[in-house]
Length: 112
Image (tube, rainbow, N blue to C red; front, top):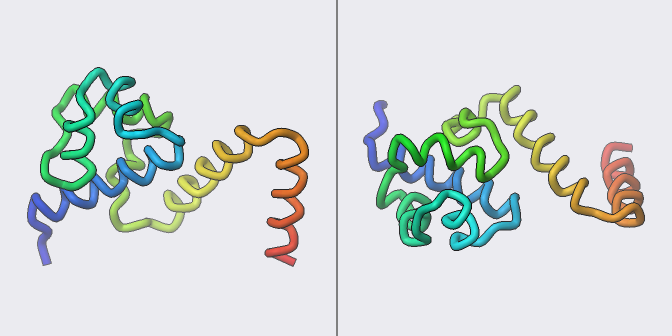
């Protein structure tokens, strides 16, 4: 079944919101980085609006992700793994040495 533009807008917006939160940014902070308003970001995240062409190229840079991540609606396995690794990497580098050691112990315990 073919998706409507509104469905695609909502999925795109959900991706923007997901990566904004992973980046630890508020809508206002992302808007500042993108040189737009927080209302624009809110409209995109809710699917009410879609990003303009120029904003499509600024958003991923502001979120420090490849553009394709914002269009990965179907969660293809390989791309999904890359997204997960990128998210973990961002979190990991925000931690101090002690936090990293604890996080690694937890992750190792989960797979053992």
